[in-house]
Image (cartoon, rainbow, N blue to C red):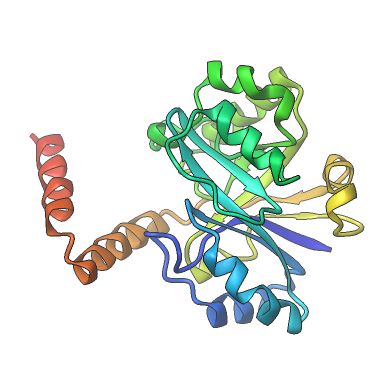
Length: 236
């Protein structure tokens, strides 16, 4: 069984993946299960879970939560968890829902704001079920090497995360297990085989345009000007 973890949909501010694009691409790539982990949202996974499962694509309802120290993913959630809490409060809320705690991209030089810092990781380590050793959006091979190093140092179960925001990223980074069951998933992942492929760098440009496009639709022009000014300052 192929499970693709860490997938985004139109519920995320930087993705345009609709239910039909997701379903078609997963079927094409022979993916059996996806963990939909939108940024600070779970409505899409909740709303379309039955739709996907009617078409034999199992759904894990997740959320990529932006804490005040970086991002943490919760899997098998029933309720949305608010962003900007401390990492400890966030993982406690995940566990309160009997969910699984998953650390995405524990090292990334290009996305430092999203990386959970090492002190926070050590603080919550006893709550963590998985940690990424490869993220499908790592633009440099060394990032995966550092992620593996952190996983080894913390002695946490290893996982591969897709971090797909576009249809062409689906089916490139996934885990193969014998069965898909919440109660045994931690043990299944420990003996899983991983499919890992390098980042399609254009995907990062794609999602930047999607983010700005969505901001235009919402009339968030102040936010757009801030992004432009930030880019201009970097270019000086």
